[in-house]
Length: 120
Image (cartoon, rainbow, N blue to C red; front, side, top):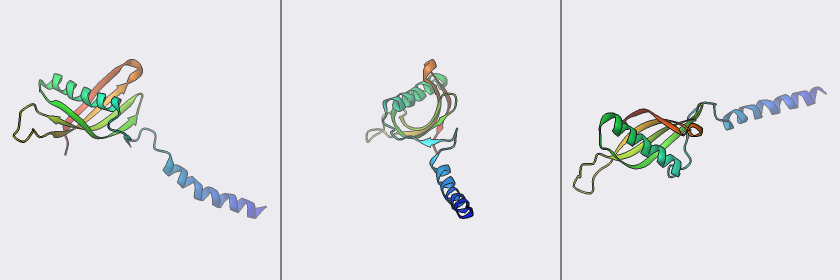
C-alpha cells in the first residue's frame, strides 16, 4: 500500500511541472501562429489607419512582421507592423517598423488602438 502511494506521489511530482509548462498563463502574451492570417492583417491595417487619424500622418501599411496575442475580455494584439511614410525613397522606398497594440472585441465589432510607437 505504501509503495503504491509513493509511486503515485512520484508520478505526480514528475507530471505536474510538465502540465504547467504546457498550459499558457491566463492573460499572458502568446506568439501568433500566422502573421498572414486575414484577421491579423486587418488588425495591422486598422492600427496604421487609426494612428494616421489621431496624428494626421500618412503612413502606409506594408505588412505584419511579427506579433503576439493576449486574451483579456477580448484579445489584445501586440504587432510589429512595417509601414512606409509615403515619401518615395530611391531604391523602392524603405519601410520602418512600429509596435502597435490593439484591443479587439469582435462580438461588439470594435477595435481600439491603445499604443503605436516606433519599434526598437
